[in-house]
Image (cartoon, rainbow, N blue to C red; front, side):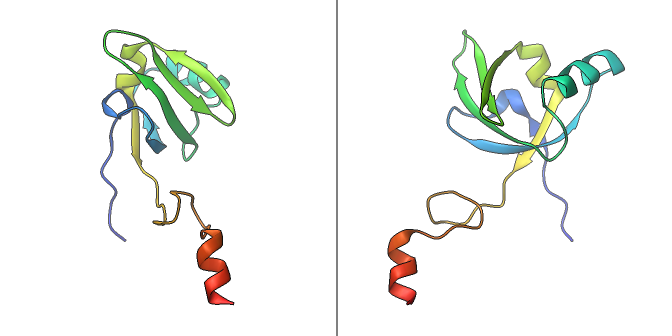
Length: 100
């Protein structure tokens, strides 16, 4: 099995969805992020990554702002998405109808 490349969340562009791989921080920050729902394998959507400006992410239907230092310590990998509409495990309605 090939190893996925992990990069800091702070480098992800607005609109991209990634999967949390690990948090490279101390116990305090790791616990705080876990309490916010940022756990390994959870999907994170970058809502806003304007520099200088807020770093806003969406996690499990909620939006939250993170400091850039925090985002630097959150390591993420790309999601395994299909080409159709960028959603895992789904096909476009047009393709489904064509296969019938």
